[in-house]
Image (cartoon, rainbow, N blue to C red):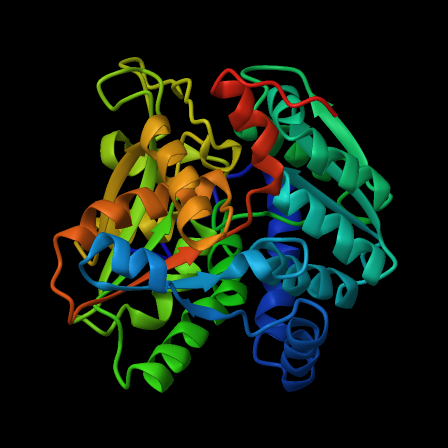
Length: 391
């Protein structure tokens, strides 16, 4: 196992062939200097890195507690942290001689990033997305199609992120020689969780350099939302050995942890198998995968990346859960306090931070990883609140 009792390659023999091909290529290129230089060049010249570490002065003064910084992944090209991982995997696919990228998406940000990278590297692109999420994220669907991607509507099961992954795996299985499965989060069979983390750890590296430049020390807390967990592991990884830094992952409590409408796989999940990995999974009494719910399409997933399950098991990261209602209040709060409209996924992290910061002394420093921007969510949240936006 890659992460003690979590991780692995629990896939059928045919898919395993594709997974092993990806693993071999990643082991070859991850320490290849020319590959690293090309990847870093794309991050700098195309993705707009480094992203800002922004001192949230108004929020800090309003909450009258710890000093708050926002890591502005929302300012990246395509509007989220997703572009970091996508550029790395797409570049690897190109080195492997693949012609087509296949990807899943929930909130649509990974799909937009994958379609963008496909254009950049002259590759075909096919995005699988649950029909429910397509309705929630119509703007991102239009962007993907505008970029030339074929968006496949997934109409079985709950028609959300889990089914999008299932559908994408089937499509990859049918075209292993020509295509590359570009996973959007730190999930799936090895080497994907490790590979995604390695492409996302630039977030934490930048936080460490930036906060030490401005504050001359590490932060006391880093907070990030967790669905599959790529933005969180990207923000946390550089600090895992810095035990003075408290790491907090925020899951989706949906309509409440005491209901069946949540996506809190770490908080309430059990060890199980999902999408080729052993991890924490929401299971019913018969061992079947539970239905999940979150207002945030990107957090609407019944499992979590295996490294997060491991970090929770050794008590290095604290995992909490935030309801739809609190996330929406945080969405509105940050918009009105800092003039920054966050992704509803990121708003889960903001919601927990609001409660925490108030109760900390002013000499403490909190960094919130703002994983994406909220343009995609405005219409959906307005509808949730009973308002209608006319296009």
